[in-house]
Length: 249
Ligand SMILES: [Zn+2]
Image (cartoon, rainbow, N blue to C red; front, side, top):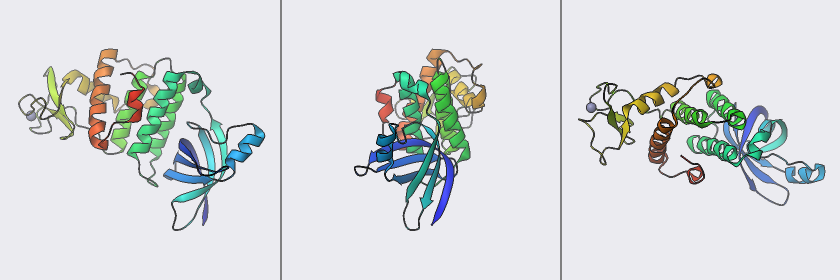
């Protein structure tokens, strides 16, 4: 048995009994973990506060026991509840989408400080930005990069030719990147995407998430990149994500 302390963002909550919940967190030091929060609901009722809300940043203490991956949550100290998210449905959906992505792309107990920091910065930014379109794209691409799924956007994955000079090329989820006109065939090998959009997607993967304010990408290009990312993630995860039903492209 060991007591662990870490920073955590709430991913999911499900009721376990009248007074207990199972809370899934993405933590900085332990990756995704499931915890049993006994009595947290009761305490919340008494004090009139919400126990551990979704999409909040907390400092948590939990107890790890042998032979089980369901840990016991003993304390959660709220660091940031991102109140602006709760006043704007679009912002809330976007932050929820980031949460769904983290949940889908991570395994239990496989920590990445880089992913935690990118995730926290994204939730914070989505809550305060007037327009978080580019921030969300950067997060999706960084998540793919950190998870080892970053596609190749510049050189044809088959013949290695640089596609920069071409207007359009194919993007193949199955092949993990761009295919030049000679190597790709629409339908069979993917979707057609303007190469300019793919090159911008590649550049977004290099950006510092704290310095996104000055980055400008025209909306139609953002839409093209988002479509390509959804097509690709659909293939990687082998399913559609719930958030896509709520989020406009
Ligand atoms: Zn080629």
